[in-house]
Amino acid sequence: MTDVNAIRAAQQDDGSFSTADLMTAYEDGVKELLTAVSGTSLDELRARPIPGKWSTLEVVCHIADCEQFLADRMKRTMGMDRPLLMGADGFRYPDPLGYQQHDLDEELRLVEITRQQMTRVLRGATADAWERTAVHSETGLITLRQLAIHAVNHLRHHVRFIEEKRQAISSTAVRVLHTPASPVDG
Image (cartoon, rainbow, N blue to C red; front, side, top):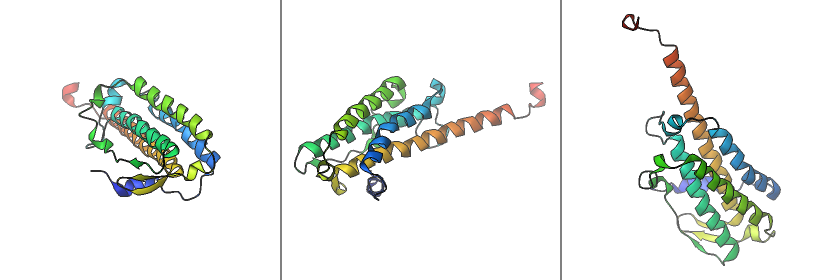
């Protein structure tokens, strides 16, 4: 089930981003994601160190899938008159799409190329285009600007979860390394 309140919060425009700042944050999201997963082994990528939470690989796949539909929504908002944007429950994708078997580099390239193309498109947007609206099937009226803010906030939100997983993996490794040997272990 889609969390409509989380979506609304992610797209909230508090006016803190100038258009230039928004574009920089959107473009820099790729670097934030690459930094978050840098140096992670395949075992660490697939590990679920926090019970009930996705693996890092599943999070990256979720981001890649969401980038595709967020880019489509932004393009349709720019190119159509008040298009209907259907909600998508990306939280249902991991098992049916086999996220744990996906290739990390491919997923990262997908995020990178999607953001690269959309950055070029958005940088060419007129001031009026940023205020163009669409109707989201779950959250109602939304502007192009709010969609871009949502994309920035969504990626940052999930990068924090990746960092949390890395910390949990590090903490587990430290506990294992510092656990005193039992007499049987000699």
